[in-house]
Image (cartoon, rainbow, N blue to C red):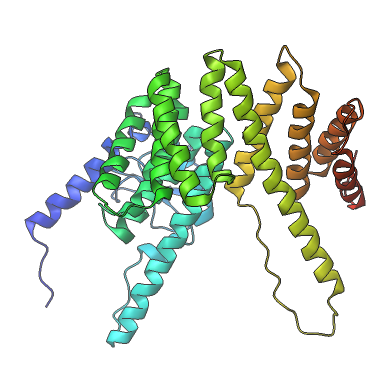
Length: 402
């Protein structure tokens, strides 16, 4: 006969529920009655249920699709659905359903392995969605997805694992964008505590931690501390990924924004140029890789067995970051009192390649033509050939509308 849970077990459960609401103030329960007339049809009212997915308060709504997710009101249900629940609704059923009574140790081990595999998949998906919302400027929408990433990371790795750092940093960045700097500082402090107590913590985690602090201090107007942390960010990112990696470019971009706000235009201009060069090189290689893959696939005989063709594609988060950063640099270039047509054309060329890669062909053609027309006015026209080639690739696509 299994042992009954002790009182300490219930105390821990209450503490966990309290922490869920306290650590995430954007989703504290609103004390308003829930009207059944406005309740979405996918959720049912319950007399007794679990705790709210977002704030930990007593819940009265349950998802009728997965039947394992609870909410205290419709607002929290809608916030979670838009952010992440729509994508993971059915994935939560096997994760939150008790494992069946398995007869052998091998079966039990396999069941646990499958559970962890599913949880890790949800972590990756929730993290990716949160990052995408953040880069698109939808910071409040990113919060539930980031919270899911934290909860499942805690279940898989434990409450003190360095694997929780990315989720804390996502929550911090989302809170910064949503205007809650105090809560962002709390999340960053949690991430910093884990990093400091992990002697062999990788440079990838450290560069992201310093970028989080840099972003916080930029938003708060503390430029000295912002530059200190951004310099650390660039150091760890370049040591881990390389001096010209896209991981480094984010630190350069934020540092350029600081100098821009301080009216130190020469330094800001050189950093924006470095950001453009990094993305331009990365995107040019991506276009070359994509064209090589297309040629290989075209040459493959339909009567032969399919061969694996390796394809290094941009992640959705990278796409969103590139769109945000390059459009911001383009806006600065186009509004600058002293115009630099060569630099502006380089940003436009990078954007044309980016939109081509994500198959937004009308924008790709628009940016490519702007870059081409700018370069035609300059005495040095080395880049015209590359842009002409890109425009031919864009025009060769059947769905290109100009």
